[in-house]
Length: 220
Image (cartoon, rainbow, N blue to C red; front, side):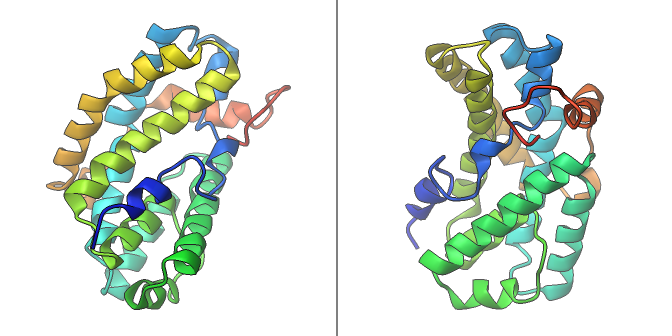
C-alpha cells in the first residue's frame, strides 16, 4: 500500500479538529514561558522528548501491532486515554482520535480497520493513527516520524496563532525539531508500554490552569 494517505491524514486540513487544540501552548504563551523562537523550541523539545511526543509514538507502535488482537488493542487504548493528565488533554486526544477514525473509515474503507473500530468507542488519537496505518499497510517506519513531526507542527501552528512568533520563525522551529522527531520515532519502535514516562510537569499543570484562563483561542 502506498504511503500517500499519510499526507492527507496528517495534514492540517484533515477533519480532526486539530486547529482547536494547543496542548498547553496557549497557556505557556499567556504565562510567559513561550516568548519567542528560542523559548518555543525549548518548550517543544521537552514536550517531544520527555512528554506526549515520545509517549504517543510508543502508543502508536503498539496500536499498529495490535490491529487484529482485540485484547491488546483495548489495553493500549485504555492506557492512552488514562495517560491524559487533565480533562482538556483527554478531550484533545479522544475527540481527534474519534474524528480521525471516522474520517478514514468514510474515505478509505478497509475491512480490518472496520472490524477493529467496531470494538472501540472512545479512542485516543495515536491509537487511531496506528490502527489506520496498519490496516492500510503503511510501513511503521514511515508512519512514525511523520506522526511525531506532525505533532510538533500542530504545536508550532498554535504558537503562531498565539502571536509570539511569525510563520518564518515557526518553520525554522519545525526544521530544528526534525532530527529529534526522527530519533524519537526510531527509538519508539523498540520500546514497550512499560517505557512510557513523562517529565513535563509544568506543561501538565498548565493544562489545568488553561481550563480557567480568561482569554482562550484553543480548547487545550
